Picture (cartoon, rainbow, N blue to C red):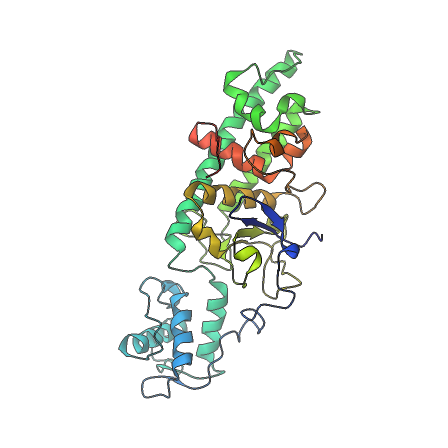
Length: 356
């Protein structure tokens, strides 16, 4: 189990190391070509051009994934029918006008193989891996996860104040189970039995703070928009074909990816460690599970890039499940599901008693 393998969440609530789940040993066909040659056309496209149907469909799809500010049709999608009609011709001309300027000799309404326009489309298409159709739904759940993370931090702050007061008063003992407003933190992280309760609570707070920072990161490979604020930030749609476990993968993240800016994967060319990937099965999960998955993967993402001291999967389930109750106090602080459960219960105001 290498440190570079991602943690992959599944519809059944489990999260496994990606190398054990059919992760492609060879680069995905989507990512094997160079960063400026992913889309290959075999003839010219535009008014009075050859317009091979397959080539036109590729261009229509690519323009649909490029933001309006870059001249794409992400806000007014083209029909990907392979027909270079008036709307597609207009979209091509508009893209060139935005990229090269009106009146430029390159802005001629025609896309040629291995020429500046197709190269520029490839550059922007590879940088925009968020599906515009799925974006609004994904952004909604990212926003809810962000609210849950903020609720978790708000719940932790009183605990730190109480711990500092008890330390100053030289008061020991089981302070959390006897304090109603702080029972939630103890329920999930067993603060009463931590070797150093103050340090444990601060470590937990820092993890949630890093999650919040990650949520606000303007990922340079996307639209430059923070997650949950009209964009998806570090979250991108999985560009690799995944057929493992019947296609049940919902999302995956590389351990400590937040601390590995611009690190690319060694197995799948073009796959970055500083992004969290949302898979097709995410759409089939219940709403609450989607929020859980986002926070769960964020925990892996912002933890240390280590299988020893990083946030891994010591146990799965809800706080009262057998697998979770058997965790040691230290394992709870290093367990992704614990962070997801605590944040959701802090956000909703009630204990989770069943899987959603």
